[in-house]
Image (cartoon, rainbow, N blue to C red; front, side, top):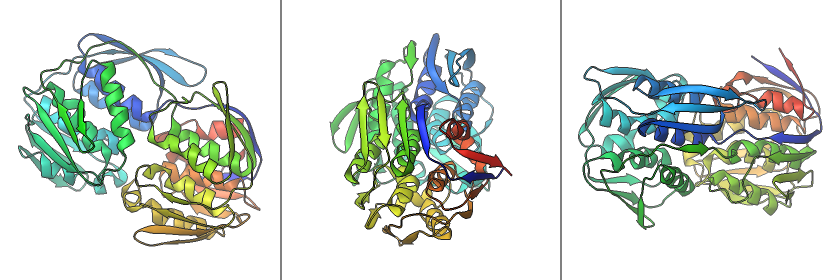
Length: 423
C-alpha cells in the first residue's frame, strides 16, 4: 500500500499507543506465572501478536476480554508454560524483540526450538547468544534458526554495545534456573534504559535482579513469577513522531505518557528542548507547539530507534547538526542510517553519512515527491513527519509497514488533520 500525503498543519489531541517494550515483557511474565493474570491497556501490533502466538504455542492462553474505543485491549492470560519432547516450530515474523526474548526461554522449556524469521530478521545478529550460551547449538538456514541444548546457571558475559534485548532475554529466564547467575557487561553499555524497564516489569511479578555495579547484575535462581493485574503505560517511542510533527508544523497535545517514564526514548523530549522546541506539561498532557528549531549535536547510542525521526527534525532545523552513535542503527529492520540518508536526499535534505556519524545541514522545507519506507515502520512514520514541511505532495511506498508497531498511525495522522490518500 502506498500513501500520498498532502502537506498540512497537524493539530489536536492524540492518545498515544501503549508501550510495545512493556507489552512484550508483561506478556512473557504473565505466561510464566502460574494462574490468571490481567493486562490492561494493550495496543496490538504485529510484534506483540507474534509474541502472544509463540507463548500460546508453549502453553499459555491469551483471551481478549474487552476492547476499548481507543484501540486498546484488556487481556486475560492463563499462565503456565509446558515442556515438550519434540521440536517446536514457531514464527517470529519480523520481530527482533520476540526472537531474542524467546531464545533463552525456549532453551529452558523445550531444549530444541525452530524459529522462522521473515523479512530482514534473518539478517539481524544473534551472535551475543551464540557466544555466551555455551550449552546451546545454533543452526541457521536462510529464514530458519534451529536452537537446541540447554541453559544453566552461569556467568554470562555479553558486549554492552549489542542490543539490550539479549540482556532482557537472560534477565527473564535466569531467575527460573536452579542456581544463581551473573550477567557481566563488556563496556560501553548502550540502551541501558531498556534494562531499567525490564527490571521494573519483572519486579511486578516478584522477580528480583540485583545491580551490583554499572556492568554487573546478580540474579538468584529458583524464583517464581507471581500472577496479578498489570497496566501498560504510554509509548514514548511512538510519541516522538507527534512531538516532531508539532514542533515542525503543528500544535498537538499527547495523552497517555508518564512524566517519570523509564523508557529510553523519553529523552526525545529533552532533545527537542535542546533545539529550542516548545513543549510543556499541562497536567497529564504533553503539549507541543510549532517553533523555529535550531541545530544541535546528538548521540543516539542509548536510543537508536530515535534516529529516523531525529534525522527529519535536524534536516528542517537552522544550522548544522551531527548525530553520532549510529552503528547499531544500521542493524535494525533495515540500515536506517542509509535509508534515511537516501530518502531525505530525494526530497531536498542536505545529509551525509559515514561509519560513525551523520552530518545534516538544515533546510527550510522539503520538495515532496516519492520516497520508500524500506518496509520499515519507523522509516515510514518519520517520512510522514517530513511531509508536514513539504512544498508538494509526498508519496510513501509500502506504508502499511507501520502495522509492525503502530497499526493506527495513519488513522491518528488523519485525526490530527493530515490529508492522506491510498494509491
